[in-house]
Image (cartoon, rainbow, N blue to C red; front, top):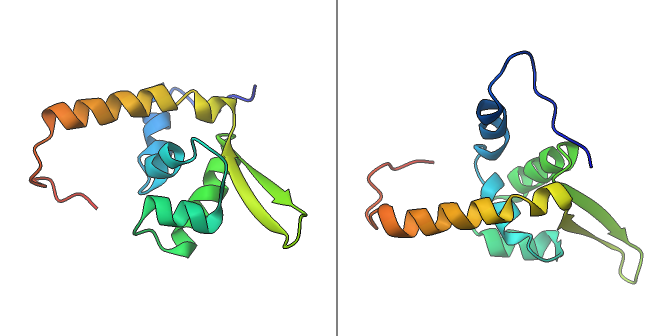
Length: 113
């Protein structure tokens, strides 16, 4: 299993946040519980433009969290799925979701983009 490299004495949390804190990244991972085509993923995530989705998928692939599969069936297409390290994030994202449901008010007081 490939591990993400840390740079220098950087805290592992900082390194993780640099990847996962990027807009749309956690939503993409959360919605890749099963293999999906690009358009399916875009629909599931909702609100992400195709260019940004493409950039995030490339980042996640470089980090070893997802894999890109070229399907040669007619018509040829591409699908994405989580790797073992990507799947390892799902319980963490589930816990964050549970925490948010319990502690974050429905009003968007942070207005985070």
